[in-house]
Amino acid sequence: MDFKPFMSRILAIDYGIKRIGLAVTDPSNIIATPLTTVKTQDILPFLYSYIKKECVKTFVIGMPKRLNGTSSSTTIIVKKFIEVLKKAFPDQCILEWDERYTSKIASNSVAYIGMKKHNSLYKETIDMVSAALILQSFMETTRQKKS
Image 1 (cartoon, rainbow, N blue to C red):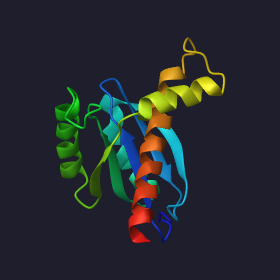
Image 2 (cartoon, helix red, strand yellow):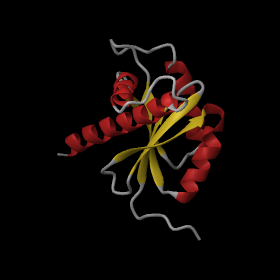
Image 3 (cartoon, rainbow, N blue to C red):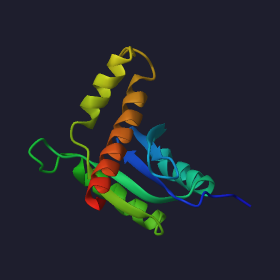
Image 4 (cartoon, rainbow, N blue to C red):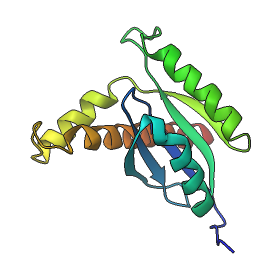
């Protein structure tokens, strides 16, 4: 029998054509932590496996938008992915979240710690950090609304 924590985690998804960055909260939903990067075609099996081990009730999906807030060229792809998620995980709450600037902030953060662009883990790290930024933004905003 699998033990699942009493409180559920929130999992953030930074969707990409080639790979997806993932981040997750602790069970108390206080800290957002980069989790991993998964090839896009492997995301559903990964999520099924992860949810068997951890209690995840909410997915927060980064929604790509242009700087002026309008849909970007990848918005429709992410919306299709959300529809797939809704069918695959009907018990989870699936929320869209504005992801503007997250890749740039993540890239600056990764550069700041000294990781070079030619490092094979560079892009994967940016995707995970972007997912953590999406999740952190979501948590901060929802906390402010509760106050």
